[in-house]
Length: 188
Image (cartoon, one colour):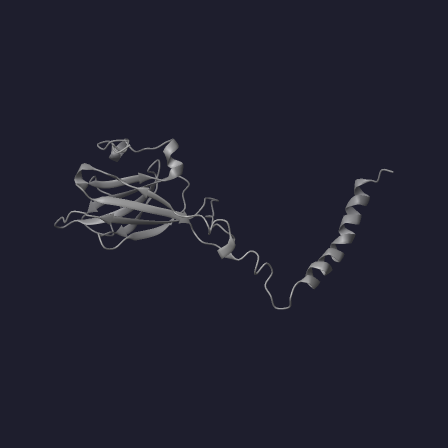
């Protein structure tokens, strides 16, 4: 016997109150819904190790080294996304062996891969890493020498650069302000 879709819809809605009573009766009073099973510590993204990327030095860096780590920003839902729907990442940059330079402040920048948007994450020193939150799918991380820590745009004095993993398919590195530096990491 075939039943009309209207009958099936009506019978589905008549079972909803029964299911709701069953679910509510299984909960302990005062315990938040999904409290134990879906805690942030047990989410799949919390268990993912951070991605660690060695940054490519320019000639100015001498023997200095830099690395950045990125991980998904924490959330009670496993991952955090921006209003535009992009994953939010926590990025931290650390340097070792930066040369002393009179009157210069080393600044960490993050920019979209087409260099249309950027942000200053702050000054960095050999003993103090810098971090921030990034909400772009593809981005470039770089370190420059500036006259002030709160510079609104970067100078042409690049010391390190690195791409986010998603930027490796297409990049502006080797174009525009990066044109004087090699596109590829000479160590690879």
